[in-house]
Length: 271
Image (cartoon, rainbow, N blue to C red):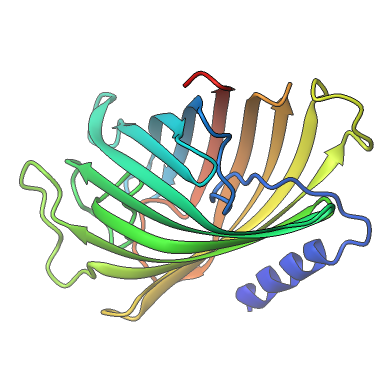
């Protein structure tokens, strides 16, 4: 089964002998927060292969980020897409994460955080997949746990998501689920530099993430695998390049294959 292959690849990645990692992920958030009193901008570009429509949809999510303190982080984003014609703003959302547990040691730490997302979208509702970060109006709440072992990072999350009708009269199709359970498993490691000598060094990280959704109302699901590459320049600028592919599922989705390119920049101690 494809799902068993996914699990096998993740286990192999996790068990790499001298693996080095970074506690930042491409498709998911870790339990750690951005630095306190900092601001950031994140520009996420998604290319989605809409096979039903025989086209590639471009989605752009500009995002402002605020590190309120060491435990609280707030994001606000706009959602732009060309799914229904020319590129336009179709929605907006906010994301809040609160870290409530930290167990730190010299070469490892364990952290847990709670998060919530709320969004508004006025695009047409064509698909059975639930996605409040770009496609649906609704909300999501969940928990994240992240373990850093020397330089190997492992993170998992579990969340509950619920959607409502989109704006401009774009209602959910009768019979489609409105509630779902999301789960993720992520791991990453640092490839370069082999030894830190300065914060000015560029970090090169590789990531592997598994992302799934289950809809209890209809007993539908999907499981995706998402490898990615990440560069962190001067500890401030981050570049992510990722590929996401469905490995198993029976949901009607906007796309089972997608590409991601993201640029993020932080400004420290500006508040």
